[in-house]
Length: 435
Image 1 (cartoon, helix red, strand yellow):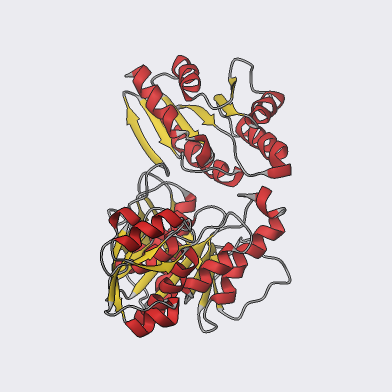
Image 2 (spheres, rainbow, N blue to C red):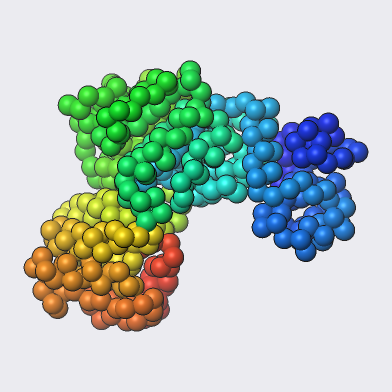
């Protein structure tokens, strides 16, 4: 990847940041030695000596590793000084990011994280690729390990921090849900004291928590919150009102309703509050493998493959049930392992199986290793043996073969698993067999 910087870096600035001597202003950053050009600032993300040598031979300047890339991103953020909205959470951060971008971009020049580039490479890239005249920068911050949110928020220095949820994603790496809460809340350490902290009123925050920023809470009417959602009507186009504003959005998910209300609250905090009726229809473009629902020859595909946790499965089952009831569909669920659960793996997968049974799933197909507990728990909760299937390992063709023998016109099929389980391949193989 080769990036044209929104502002050029002077020789004095390059020396102060990286201790390197350049003769002319640097205008480009290069992350791939094969693309390096004379005068580029080259960053070796893997500290690969061979790549560094190749870039130097092409006339680039070696500026450092991924930590140095973060330093440059922080410098550019300070120079351009847009209003920075940083969004994190166990689940729902990408959805919230898309809705926040849709709302803000209708008012001011806004740049956002592309897809889910939310790590120590993706966040700097999102900053470095913003146009010079950006007024608002919407960033998604992810975390697989303790300390990552504090590090990323230190790079982008948010004016507005959003936490969508505190769940169990990656709990095996954090050790407990309390530790996950600490990780998410660490975003506030680098959020401006004069800034805002926006979150659902139902967010599981420790009782001892307090923050310097102004809190804005979003929730249903009746909850103690600042942005009250009421008169909700869910459908292919959902509608509700919040603080007197009538809102419509292209989703029947209650979690998308919350995300869109968070977006309105962000606009208020950013000083570009939306006072009139607002439609998110045609404004929101969700990334692939995230709540992508479509019908093919009478079979409804619910592609939510990108990642998984018990909280996101719960949300997907709620949405699936809503569609199934309205359209009279049979519910088929294909679940792969929820990875990075550590010592909690057995319980989380058992709880997932119980959840499927209690939610009235008609057919459950589980695959992987720990998903054996999902299948066993569903059987133990009363699902029939002819309704529950388990395929050990990660043979996508085997899973697709079982699914193809079961599914029929009039079904809705949910596909969901952790990213490493590559659940999307099952969809491709099913389509090969069925069509």
